[in-house]
Image (cartoon, rainbow, N blue to C red; front, side, top):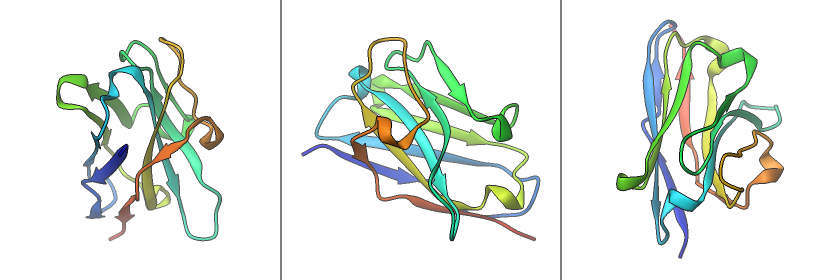
Length: 126
């Protein structure tokens, strides 16, 4: 059974850092593009970053460019989201998602992914 599990969320002060992990089980990630998404209370789920199956292409939304970095270790079947200089507006539930996109491609639209994790809470507050 294809499963994604996020971890690494928590409470952090503004300006702090967190690293989220997305671990896959039941399948190997190396054929899948991965996206990270977040959803704040009362808001729609939005794309944060995505990475192509081999890691050659990454895309990030403007609000996190220069602060968040997406990466993957296919040998460990895991994708990461390094989040630095966190702001209160980064607060939300963070989800990873996977789907089969052609090599070199990924998208930050939630509709582009069929397989989702359960999410991990990130709270940025003093």
